[in-house]
Amino acid sequence: MFNLSTGALIGALVCLILLSAFFSGAEIALMTINRYRLRHLAESGHRGARLAAKLLARPDRLLGVILVGNNFANIAASSFATLLALELYGEGAVAIAAFLLTFVVLVFAEVAPKTYAALQPERLAYPAAYVLRPLLLALYPMVWLVNTLGNLLLRLIGVSVLAKTPTEVTAEELKALVREADVLIPESHQEMLLAILELEKLRVDDVMVPRNKIVGIDLDAEWNEIVSALTTTRFTRLPAYRRSLDNVVGMLHVRRVLNLVREQRLDLESLTEALIEPYFIPSGTPLNTQLLNFQKVKRRVGLVVDEYGDIQGLITLDEILEEIVGDFTARALGQRDDVQPQSDGSFLVRGTIGLRDLNRTLGWNLPLEESRTLNGWIIEYLEDLPEPGTSLMLHGYVVEILRTRGTAVELARIRPAPQPKEEIPSQHSA
Image (cartoon, rainbow, N blue to C red; front, side, top):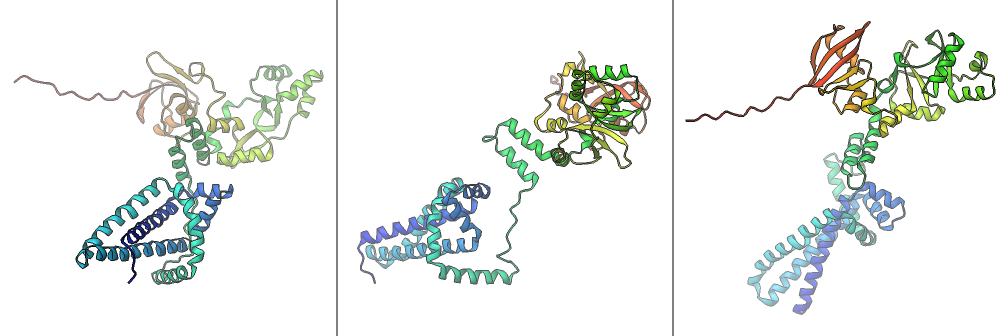
């Protein structure tokens, strides 16, 4: 038996408990550390992060060296506690020493360090990596033996240690991460990031200018009508067609027209020569794909066509960007032609307005799954063209048809349905 003084036994016991606490905390810190931040720091040259990343590349080896060290510290602490009990109080105190050591290890070497490591993983993970990496190399034969036996046992139950769990983050998980980063990311930036992630769910059909609202130049019209259209338009790029929008011959940039005016050679022939080839976009193209396509072809405007080649609408790069950053060209609510607030709290709304625009303008939550416009929403629900004066309740909104034209609802009045008031039980005297 070792002939150690009481002070030496107490000092060794304290050191072993601290060593056990280090291994317990290092285990939790390395296992709970943010892997994406760890990868970023490792790629940025952080040495502790690089060492931690190497250790986490083989978690079986990491756990092996931690458990070897932790069990050694705990077993050695138990031996020294027994020696200390015999030294001070004799054999009768061994059981009490075991109980006290269990309590001390549980509190000071397990619960406290593991809780701290879970709350502050980076503060412990990186320094611990400097210790565990060389310790793994020094104890590799023992760790290899322990891991080999442990991995063999796992193979017997059908678990492969080399099969890594995929670490890719899904779009929904990434959205949750963005929402939880409210302290680090301003709310406006959060909204933009979430809007970018939502682009894959949207199609060009959801944000395009519908065919009946496309402003263009009819090259077969009278010359004075063409000049009037060019001088009064508020758009910089216009589709040019002959007689019908189905016969688009090109896109016209108003800047080229100004150059022709400056050179005093603006006529139908020079105007036709200034056209550029139209850019057609298949209906149903996701917005994130179309954003990349605009970048690839160096265009800002495209015509959306269906499977038969018929033009369904027009979409611009600005409309896609507005889905990310919000409306930066839209007019104020009181100045919109398609939404007019009324004194009674209702709104006069044109049937051609898109439901997405209506939701964004008024902060409503109209369904977008089946219809894109107010007119389509009403007709889809009724399965018929309503007569003026018809009123209906749709998803908590009272919709009154004011005017129709042809086969479409032209104008409707919409107000949120009043919420039922809670009934207060009346009090009767006895």
